[in-house]
Image (cartoon, rainbow, N blue to C red; front, side, top):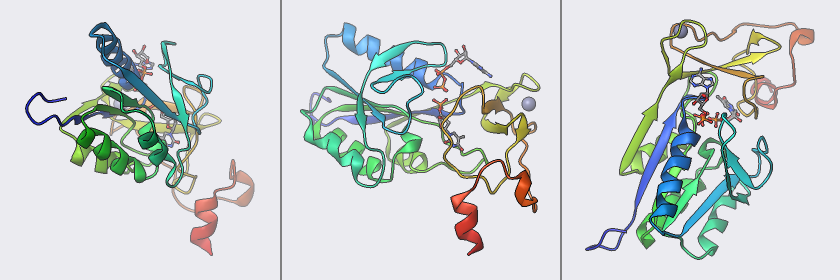
Length: 213
Ligand SMILES: Nc1ncnc2c1ncn2[C@@H]1O[C@H](COP(=O)(O)OP(=O)(O)O)[C@@H](O)[C@H]1O
Ligand SMILES: Cc1cn([C@H]2C[C@H](O)[C@@H](COP(=O)(O)O)O2)c(=O)[nH]c1=O
Ligand SMILES: [Zn+2]
């Protein structure tokens, strides 16, 4: 916390998938631990890629975490825990907007809050609640990966279903890594649009169905 005001602050680490967000989060946590600060790490229940109670990078580094219900008011549970000096929340893109309130309440109480998450959906649209977190934070780092097609810096998340670009109507949430996503630049990012025959839809999209009602 700040010495004079005793308030904390929010740091956001964002950018495309594979850009090193989790590695950077783990680096900051290791440094906090070396400094002898108390650290609490949270991960959403939806993301079980690295085992339930850990956060993990694409290179295999891990850190123990508390699993939090990411839906609705679930993130508010974090406020019931004793406030740690450093509070880290990974995969912020899976949480509801309640996470913004939680991060601000923790910072008001004096914690250094480090939030990591990708800021764009596979469509290239803002991925809530990252825009709100980035606007409220004191510090924002936006990282880029390497475009899998051309090798330029990559800001976008290319979703691939059975090797083919995803369709604009596909659901927003699809947990995954290399098997379903690539980092791509603006120029190489591809999104299928237009009508598709029912049998070519790789999976049912609740969002598309409700939009068609
Ligand atoms: N296209 C890519 N661009 C950059 N790094 C990549 C790419 N694909 C795989 N990687 C690996 O992913 C690591 C970053 O992993 P991670 O921190 O988990 O990223 P993020 O949390 O942003 O998804 C890199 O250090 C590199 O080893
Ligand atoms: C673009 C996009 C991503 N996701 C999911 C896929 C992964 O499980 C995470 C991002 O992980 P990372 O640590 O940033 O590599 O988000 C999604 O559900 N929908 C999307 O549009
Ligand atoms: Zn490219």
